[in-house]
Image (tube, rainbow, N blue to C red; front, side, top):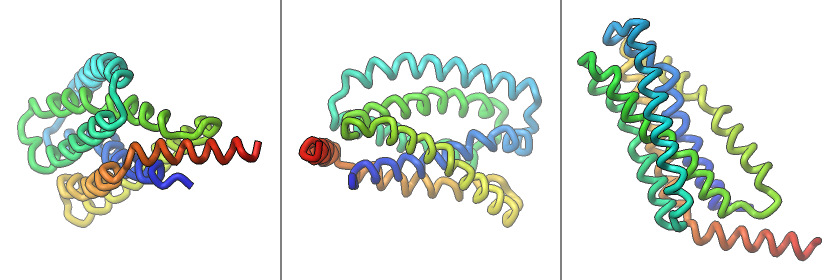
Length: 203
């Protein structure tokens, strides 16, 4: 039983639902709201690819140097930026330049989250459980992503506007941030040591 890891995993899963919904429905959204063309979509893909490469290349060395507490709050800060994406779609997206601006900004932030999260998990998972736990993280990341799209589609159908659907999925990341903020790095590491000691005692 590792309550701190459960909190962080819940926070991550909920925030991923929001992010995945924005990514999965972005093209449909901009085509409907701003009449985006196929060329626009290709440019968006190029922008996201470039910014993501830059972001990931920069983030990995930084993660290696961060201590536990700063790492936790850096992760929280990055995840706290992600509600901007659906809120931008709800409030903004009235000018053509925004089609490319949002992916550019998101491409700088989103790729940093996973290395930061893995860095935290690696310091808190008891030895011998790494493969099983990271498999669980992968299942939660992919397995619940569809929930946001269902909510988005349902609200869009009910209101007639995809903007309200994007506002609705913001609730997932809002709740997820509460769990991430409640995560205690020191308690998680202490619990890891306790579990490892228990395993050694039975070995």
